[in-house]
Image (tube, rainbow, N blue to C red; front, side, top):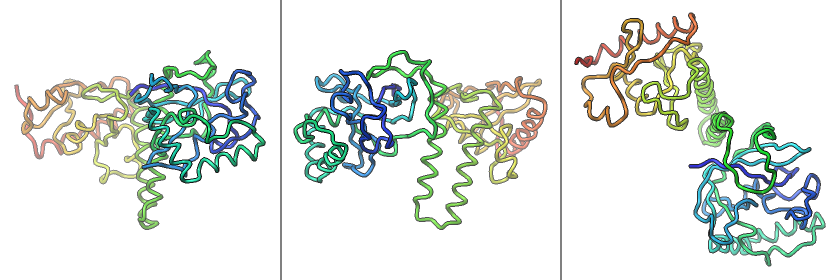
Length: 346
């Protein structure tokens, strides 16, 4: 799915409802200046959902002529504040609406009294504009997404040097490192929220939270130590497909070993399963580490999975202490592999 970025107007209420003219554009042709607000100011309002979706508006998404309807993107959001472009968050899996979907949403908002609530918020700001019930549906709703897929950053990121355009247009995201950094951080935030909302006991929640936090720290430690974010076997670099995999089994590790980057490898999920079940390992050979795979696995299936026997794992960039720790972990893994498997032989 493509990654886009677009501008939203400034809002001092975290985009839960309109906040007035403070910080708004001085451009006389802009929607926010003409009417004193813009519809994306309700973007962060989470209580109004239809069939599990949040319906909202982004100025850059113009589906009036059906040009964008049906498109799906991950969209990063930035706003202008004190002449700086500040990226404040992003929405995963945004879906662009057709007119009939927007109209059905508007009808539901009217039936539920939600449109009247929005109108009341505008009235409190003394904003005199076209009544919402007379506004075209696509001018109020042109996107939908799952509420959990709207991620607000804890601290906005200044992206002024990345983008010269400050208009309300949809642009390609040009900072992939920034993307991956926040995807990792905010997936952790969502997982922790999910754990806390379960009906488990307090002790179970504490244990689950500690384990999940440790998983995030461990992943970052593995990436930092190996200086790589691709699978050590297939070289795939799609972040959501990669797992930070322990070499020494997690349940056998000390607290320090559980977080040690030298005790891990970035592997695709299917490779991780082979590795964790000791059906694959990296064995030392002439000063290098070579992939060995169980003889019980069909070579044609391995080929279909993008797994090549005798793939070499480079350890050249590891410092001495890290390399020594890795050697200890991988030797233990080799021993487990040998216990239950037969090596491939040409």
